[in-house]
Length: 245
Length: 239
Image 1 (cartoon, chains in turn brown, purple):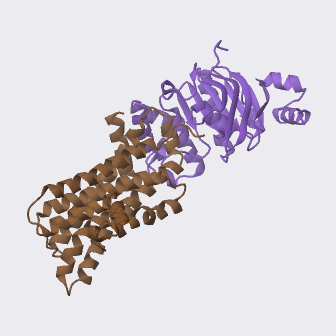
Image 2 (image 1 turned 90 degrees about the vertical axis):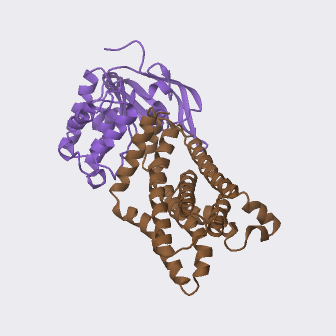
Image 3 (image 1 turned 30 degrees about the vertical axis):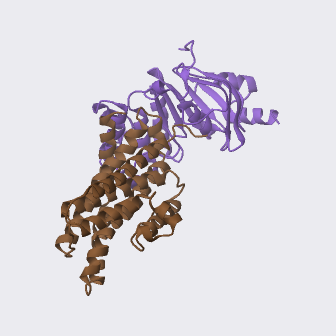
């Protein structure tokens, strides 16, 4: 591993994206539009927006970052540039961390933008400190990025990569506590929900929405989300092969 | 300048992919400072052999040494330049951005970026996005990447396919230049007239070596006037 090569990779990924204005626009604008739509839907019942808004503020960036990252890294695998890199003097982690850094940066911008607009423009009212809301949104977007990196390893085509979104993310969405609180799920599903990162992401969001004080519980949730993100990065690097069979 | 130690040495090399034997018991030694042509029809195993040499392909049986080390060794990663059939460069970056990135990965001085761009005669459009270039221009960017760091061994998989004849001639002159500087080149082609430009020839058919010798020895052995006829004579005699 070399920090210089990690940073070179990350700068390269950002340069690639800088030539693609439409993707960047969609990346930043889509979560804002979705949250605005949600605020509008609940305009007759702002209490419900305050209940559901924070949880979805965690989910939207995660979904968008998951898709963008998995397609971008899959492209690297399919154009032959990854094979070229794999026979060069560069570590697998340099490449994965390079991607994680650049997409992580985008995730941070996106989450900060979405939570700021939700609180100040759409009037999302949270009991806890707004900065913690932003921190959790950033962690969720990072988790989406890292899961996307990992998922791309198992996709052979863009079609498969897109299908991984419903396969990886939607089950987590159903079980995360948004539809039915996790402790009211059937016991098997309750157990499964406790093994999925989105459950902790949504739990942290719900806590900060309802409680005015920061609690150890909130930080535990945040730590679990970040631990899943880290595990996904390491697994992603482990899936890279220098030689094919 | 035939060195004692071969640049690429294969002993009983076999590669099995998806249950099929793609390379079957190859034994040869490629000489340093030569252009060795890897000639054979599509599907004969040329690309698989090249991928094995650069260390991207797992070997089933036998040994394959490159520059005195087992293929795929960590210490070889700085010393081999590889050009794949389809240009392995980033279409959404300019030629310069591509070269600067790979230079950073190889730990190569930035001044060399301009040098290799000049070698492939692309300095005028270095700032253009690779995705908007013609196929020939993209191929040259990919070749420029392989030239970074002055690798001792260049492995070029059909580097001139689909290029205009003037450019093809220019590239073969470049390959000859590189060989004169003491670099070794392994160049694959399915175009027999390109084989005429090589000093040594490895003819491959169905994953087996049909012949490996200098070009002159091949023509003498088969009593033919060109490589095309020599290949035919050998392939028909093999039946």
